Image (cartoon, rainbow, N blue to C red):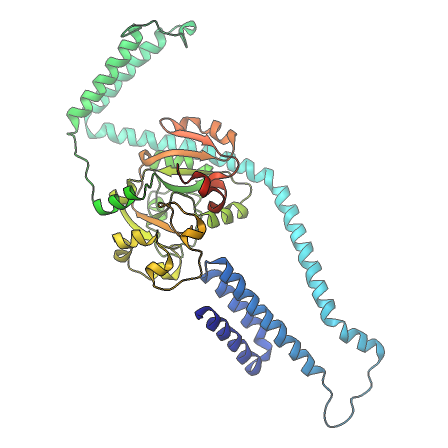
Length: 437
């Protein structure tokens, strides 16, 4: 009922504009359309509202033109040449057809430009990836130097391990590489040397830093995540960002700028008003936004990162039932988003949260698993940096991207999912993967 009342209000405002300022009717429709596109996130409602706006404009504009063609009541209308009548009657269709043809030419021109620029975009993307990789290596070297500066023992330990490992590698003969070792507890003196080096590093590390018992700052959130069988969080990004992420972790826009980094961020506007937070999804990417950015940047390569669910209860998180830029979320204080109730609301129907339906399909209609948020655009905002160790798995769309970044997947699972899965809409894949996702 509220939706119908809102549409009636839109029609009323357009009627007022037509009566008070007929010339600005088109401007009012454009303003309403912009407000609809940028302020609503449920696409059926967006479509309904746009239809109401422009259908109202068509009706009012037609009555406008009909009124302007009525003859004066003071006397008969002057005779109009047949050619003029033909031009007047065909003016509106003529303008419409010209508009459509201009639009078609513009779309065709944009497609040609995009097609011509695609090789250049791909070359730039590859060069950017190489540069980012080199920068990440340089930053790692700087961090290593800072680590050595903290304690002289660090440098001596590193030099000793490096010398012993280099000696082992130099002693290896080419024909021995890849040979199957004989059975036994230790097959080779080289293996024994490696074991000794690693044991010495581990022992020194234990002496230098006392063990710290892991803590669980939010046991209530952990209990909910365990009960709902949430196995991972999700973040999608451009492949070009991978070297930096694997070296520095997932950084917020604010944190990246403070370090002098310039990552290729998806959301440049940050309408949620929280540039100090990293945006994650639960179990599945925000399919609507993922499709939008891939359509806007067709030459880019993308990767989906699966992250530890521990982030939910060990870091400072805000649990958003809808997109963080949605006015129902962005107007709430941070403290309201960090509660167990806010986390539980991500997995509830609208009637359970607000008492009334919001027009979105129910969980039963979407056939969701217990750990799937009701709204696919639901987010977890993480204040602070997310360490590279929190990345469990990297899912690529193209096999050559996996091969090019193979060294970054060391210790993690890397795979290719060319069709469906995380690169598809959740509705098509959730029933098939809900038991394992």
